[in-house]
Image (cartoon, rainbow, N blue to C red):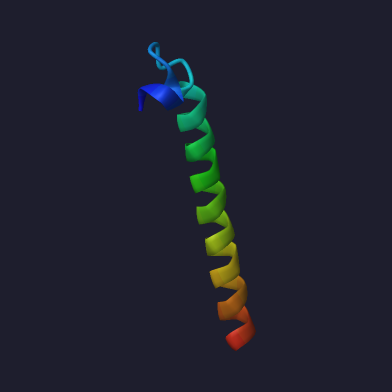
Length: 42
């Protein structure tokens, strides 16, 4: 872990923020695709 983040862990905040944003986008896209698929099935 130390080699990646360094001793002061300064990169963890931006990485967590990036991970959270990517997760939220993935969830939204998944919901949109599911809704479109449900609508298409009818």
